[in-house]
Length: 179
Image 1 (tube, one colour):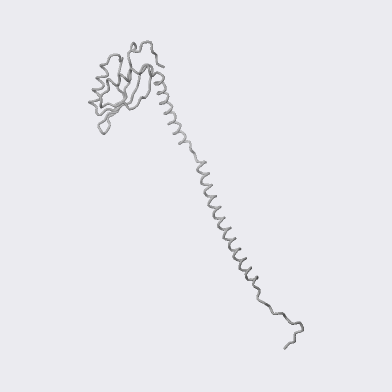
Image 2: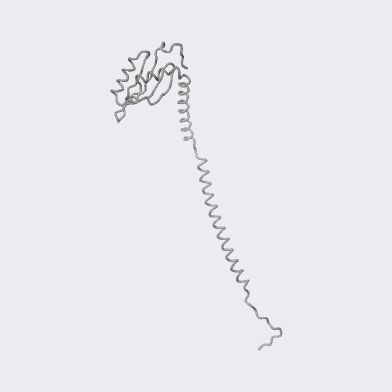
């Protein structure tokens, strides 16, 4: 047996070292997992950003051209309506004429445009026989220079789409001039 000159102290188990080692390991694993999750999220957001940039850079000219064409159509319709409203007193007779002479099975669906001293409407009739009756009524009216049916189209349902142009007699307007 060896004699000890300096007595050794009895070593007590250190609680702090294993505890801090475990805590450090857990924190390290947590930070590493957080970094991996953040990298994954950043990668997903980069992909989304690239996708949005490709969509933004894509050629949108065909869509823009279609929208511009539709806008021009709406402008033309608004202009026609403006002309009619500006001269609403001058064309009131036309609507009275249509009210008095329009067959119950003939529908005027669209006021297409107003040319100099003429009015063009789009319409639809229940069948061709009714449209012919309507044409005869219009042609027999006083004050009309001509009533011309154009673009007559027979639909599969038996209905008839058409375009009609009214040209009133010159003396019918008196001193009123259009456009």
